[in-house]
Image 1 (cartoon, one colour):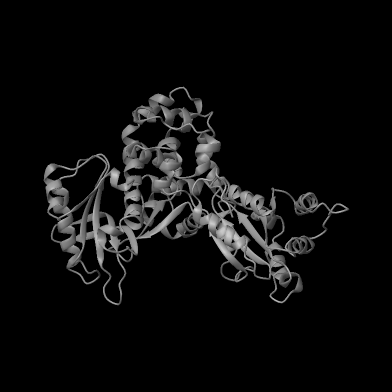
Image 2 (image 1 turned 120 degrees about the vertical axis):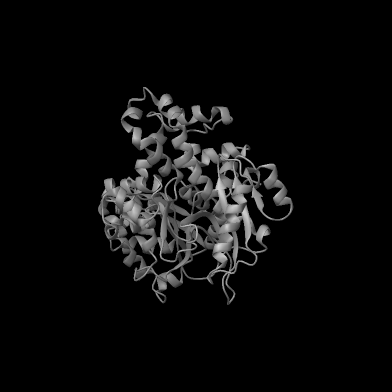
Length: 486
């Protein structure tokens, strides 16, 4: 099936949807499409229905009775029956959806499904009953029903555990944000430094460029500061309140103040449970629920320490949330008045580098190591994370920004690489000596095989001549911005 010419990338998602929608096997099938708002889910599904002659319905926040009337009107327009279709219950609606696919495979999309399920919690069970394996209405249909939603906590539970639809779906497709390389292409940024700075602010959400700021991108590095002021920090921009809306859109995030405080703690560098608890003013055991809810909503990620099995760190997944909590929330009253926005931004330059760009650069370096650097290690890492190494002799600890662990294959897992990341610092021989010391400390225990551990220096500012010569001797690998975006 032809992919629309105006669709950027999404080749994997389009291929999965077209395979599902054109499956010619008998029997109705069910699929689930999920992802945070503004990732292009509706664009994908509407395009699919247009190409395949399918039925698309986008639910609204409404009562159950109004929702039934709305989908009845949509089906009347699509089917053009002799009399309007006025359903009295959802089992009738689902059976009509199944009848759409009597003659051929046809995609049928219910977008924003959580709105319907919130108004009628029995709806997943109704669909489960309609999809009973030997039910004639299902076996004689080739309807390819797709349920789509942006409430990540709800959609994540739709097929899990004892949920009614568990085992019924033959497609479970997440539509994620664009990775940092794809985001650079989407924003048409060829300067890797500018691309990383923009990604540190707005991440890889497509609609932020298209719908929210109408293709306003920084022209070059000199325009970056002005772009942040006019496109992100201006109260007249839709992006100004977007970070707050990200939390408001999740129905499970009821105590907004608590969740914003947790995110602010992480944005301030408190990645451990204890540090978050101290910032928020709660006990550590009282944070299990809010951390789990934020994780289920796709807003934070839980990462294990590469060298301490009992330590877990939390990272914010959406760059805009980090930017908001580090750069906007502390100055919110002044930004709301929009009288000193430019001065606030200029004066907070070091805060932007230290709290936003530096941590974001580390995350991008880990993403590159996990997804794009297999040629450096002779194989794919199974996990790339950060870690902390104890140094008893020195009575200190060493933070490791990048630790790439390979597949165990029956023995000790190989530690493929350890790396240090510096955004604004030219890296030199001292950084290499530190990595050598860390590799030696890790090699003294039996957790990892360090016989082939590579040392990596990642820098956004460059490397000294001594370090370049060391790289030429094979002692260290140097990774710059051109490598990350190569």
